[in-house]
Amino acid sequence: MGTPPPPPPPLPMPMPSPMPPAAQEPAARIFVNFRNGDDPYAAWTVQRELGARFGRDAVFRSSESIPPGADWAATIWHHHRGSAVLVAVIGPRWLTIADENGPRLHQPDDWVRAEIAEALRSGKLVIPLLVSGAPRPTAEKLPEDLADLVKLQTVAMDHRGTTTDRAIEALVERIAPVVGLVPGPGGTPATGPAAGALAGPHAGPDRDRSCGPVSVPAAAPASVPALTPAPAVRNIPPVGPHHLDRPDAVAELDDAVRAVRSSGRPGPVVVWGGIGTGKTRLAIEYAGLREADHPVAWWIAADRPDLVPSQLAVLAQALGLGLGDVPDVTAVVPALLGALRRRGRWLLVFDGVRDPAELAPYAALADGGDLLVTSRTGAWGELAAVGCRVDRFSRQTSVRLLGARLGRASEAVLDQLAAALDDLPAAVGQAAAFLAAAPLGPARYAELLAERAAELLNRGETFSYPTSLAAAWSLALDRLAAEEPATADLVPHLAVLAAAPVPFEFFETGAADAPPGLAAASADPIRLADLAAAVARSGLFPVDAGAFHPFPLFQAFVRGRTADDRLTAAAAAARRW
Image (tube, rainbow, N blue to C red; front, side):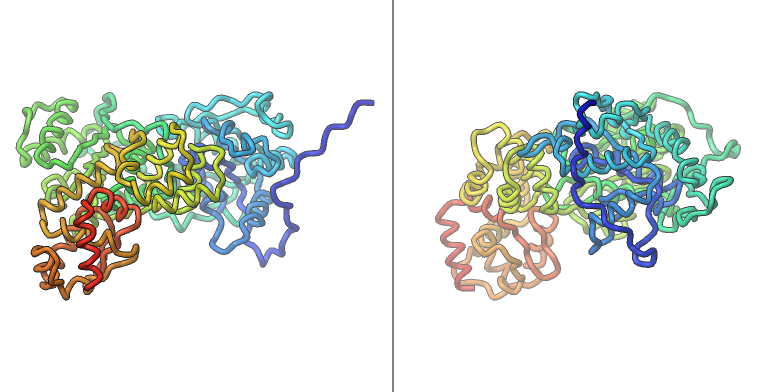
């Protein structure tokens, strides 16, 4: 008699006993299983596209489907137990993501493992979805309770390329008869049960959906020019190997673009936020995610408005137009619109617009396509169709991203480092890159930031950003001083104060020994308002209607690049105010 097989590993949390129907919402029929830090955009895409066809409540993904205040473990197992299908999203890092105890997948308390193992044990339909070129897992690389996964037919999907639609349709075709729901055509949720199936609670329309794919008529009216099949025209920058995943922010941006598209009122979607918050990276991620939607996707570096026309001339040349090296704006926009409309939908990204007035001549390029703008200012008024603010990371996201690069550091140490970095995306990325290659621990790095931030923030690979955070802040400070000379004195004064909001009233009384420019501005509320507006446009730190909000990392950086005698004078003046 052979040795009996070992018992399966314990679940991360015991599956709770069923609650009465009135105490808990109906379970979703489709459960999306994914690993944090692997490829979150793929899981989000699957949830969105399947929700569009079967109804939003029919699909469960833990990152989005657990309501605030809910018992998250009980909620996960409730939907897992009630589901008929589990889609296991497997990306390039699915097998290798590890912590101090080794690969997560081989640990008995791993949620990804437990969810798949329980689905296999209970006989659910399990579909492995291989995304972004991930290979099919082999038996020797899987824990024993997931060994049957290698026997299952997979579906491959590249959600940044052209295979998304085919993969989603393959999933829909396989899932529909199992869950007993009729998929809606063209992204419209089902309105009734499948033939011979009982009507379920998820068969109705998705009422929360703000917009959906536009259906294309079989024959276009004679007045609409026929689309010309042509190779894709693209110059979108690539996503770096260590890009910082922000699936929720990309989802919000995608919703905003779709809402503008369906509103009938075209205009730019403005992604705005301070220096180092990841606006450019977010735009690149969005462009990659929706690559299949845009036969033309063109990136324009817009921080130098005088160079925008020449970049549009290159686009015109790629579209087969001859407009000269530097075309006149009044001529290039109508000509480009005509050429773009013959190609289908397009995406134009104006990256780094400093003054909304600089974009005004090109706003018409949103008519029929998607126009995305990144900017440090949110003061766009009526020129923007919608604005999407990009802020710092949550602490949880900072710790997760630092842990993915630094491996064996404890969560407490990573939390300390994230706090010292103020959860600023660029700072988190640079610190992770520097520490991954340097014989310096995270705790020591956090200590050094207080005194040597200007040096540290000039180190670490910056492939995900145009320059180091130190260089970006230095350039912005120089530009700000050129625009408003008094800010050269204002900023050091803010740097020596406590890390808390500084009301404008703090400066309005002036100070006898303050530098003349700052003293004059402080005594005049209109001049002080001008200074505050200039600081807000710079993106160095937040400014609201009544206060400056410098954060500790920026203050440490300013102190590190300011002469000691100026800091001493600023501190003395601040004590008198």
